[in-house]
Length: 219
Length: 219
Image: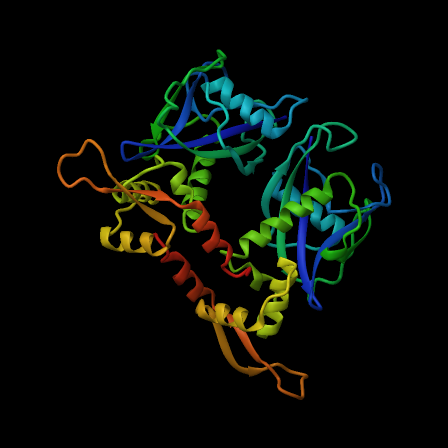
């Protein structure tokens, strides 16, 4: 048997969060877990991951991607089950209406990654591996921008990097580096709802990014 | 059921090659295929991938890593089998003694990637995905050096890049870029067996690379 498990990251209030469910079924009844379940015989892995995520959380059409398959012999107490891990980075804003459509999950919710409870099965390990993946990816892919609103301040960008890397960054160095890449576009717009020293808003320029990125060695 | 399939890349005589077997069993008897087989119930995925690779090719202790799991419903003619893909980049030199230890593979051999025959199952797709992976990786990880001898000329390095990227690169630009990264160390040694204008030999300086790479944003 095989299953899929999703590690969905979101960013809200300066905190990096992960999407969890509360299980309503044995094994690990009442435990917190990643949204995951058994794949049916007649569905593809990608299709199963989407279906299961939807059934357990109410969210669909997320840009999920495979990152690793977990196949230790004793990872599941009820027999041999390997599980294919998927991850996504999304904007929590507008994805708050979490509503499982099956009884298998009692509820779905966002939980800060910094304070994660013990999870069912080997889900803590699966989460850690996904977290490590996005940390590494952040060094060479513009994945941070998938978590931010379309328009953001440099302070928001920095606090996201700090949340993912779990450490404080020097403000001046961070800004200098970020702007030096050339793919942040300063907008002719300021932050709203701030009366004093409103910060400039920026946008990620994907076209420029691709131009820079793809000219590395391959050109 | 699930299986593992390995895409092992090597570089020899200016050509990028992949390790194939000739199958001796149905389905796809007599076909060329990636080295792969069914995982036993009592072994981990990683353990299975290593065992199967050894049994079908005689090679062991290769630095194989998972890259993708393939789970289309009809990918296997005898029932539902998902397969976990592993890849590695190795130095062919010294890995020429290919000797299957099971009858399942009639022989194992290196085949140029540019001229790949039709492969069993969805192995062509699995190969393509691995190939794409190493192309992309080459832009941000020093994987090229896993394929080259420890000491190499810039011409060798360029022909490897050309083989992986499937295109000609401008010699001057390529050298300038490569040397500008700062992780190639010129040795006080020349290419051997060349009487006229022997080229300098270089080494990849992993420590320097890590220093550069890890200081990107995270510092």
